[in-house]
Image (cartoon, rainbow, N blue to C red):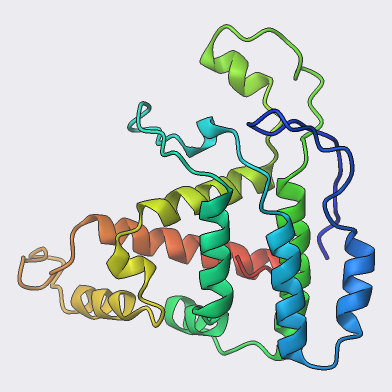
Length: 226
């Protein structure tokens, strides 16, 4: 299982964390004692919700190709994504459609929820960086002094891409667009190249498709359900 980290850090609004938002060992013990998987899901949702007030460094939301385009994302975007993931989206559906893998059991899903809660918890804490108090004059200095850990970078990418997704993707809970795009790609003679009739989706949809594949492969390698 992922190991929790904890180091106090300021968030973008200047709030200083003085204690962990949730106690992970106590949380896991309480959830394990619940009678049904549905009860456990609700309990996990509440714990993820408690982690909502942390906000990423805005520079993590910047698109490298368009450095001046930094979306204004906050904890409400995290909550909106959290609600959709728990209320509308089946992780097993995503796993089957995107990776063509069989469904996980409730026990396997519970273990992944546990790992994912630790992962998101770690996103709210600081990376230990001895250069964090150095003066900042350049973009390179900003990167050198960063206290953003790998979990924070991944969560910020997920939030940024979710903000970028068109509604046709964001609210397609059965991933019909993904299935249809695969069918269109399978029909292409790649020696001749695709035609407009064969690929009806915009080109950026292929990038979104590859992003989801990468995210799901990360989930498989780390036993998460992001």
